[in-house]
Image (cartoon, rainbow, N blue to C red):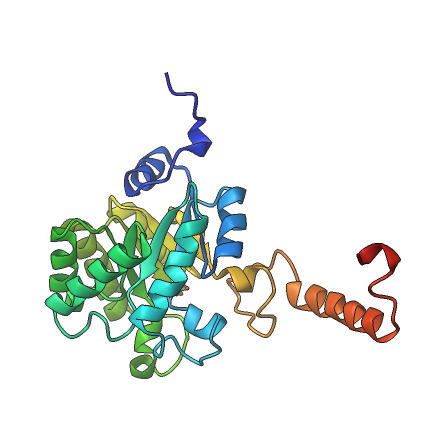
Length: 272
Ligand code: KIV
């Protein structure tokens, strides 16, 4: 008999689907580097998303559009090296899958081969159906992403709540059912009304993971740097901050600078 505790078992796409069936909520956070991923994994997070939000958070770009496939692989491989238990999902970046399904497949295979990640995520519904099917046919698990899809920000024009109108809500529900029927293992719903998100979670069999989509879904995802208060200038309504690291780190660094300037650091015990 295995002595591994349930909590120590590696999370798979199957585990997430079992969690939905049991009504157990799924926890997901973003990770882009080895050190942070090691902490998040040790804390027991179910899914680590190597999000293309790395473009904003790590590189300082205004949108997610500039990040490249090779840069995503660099972040993903750093995260994979840190992880013992969590499922690692990697975003296919803008421009790596929209051209055609062969391009999408090649990008997904490159990510899986070069990073060692467990699954990919891509944005869109019916317009990326063929690409998702082709990636799935190669045995690569796919997570969908509907609602506010940041790679289309120049089409939307703003980051406001999506699918408030009947027509868009209907299209979103259809797309979610489509992603479920073709074999996606989960879907992220970003910034849509809580009621609609709850209805989608009821209608589809696969887990729905929300960000700004209320509590009636199967799990939650946040950008780690937002929930830790590192990106302190970003305060959407859906964000709960668990720390104020911007302030704490600034204060600690201020203390270090002052200790160096006043020749207090290093002291006699902090040298050889
Ligand atoms: O890139 C990202 O961080 C994401 C989450 C917001 C879901 O896609």
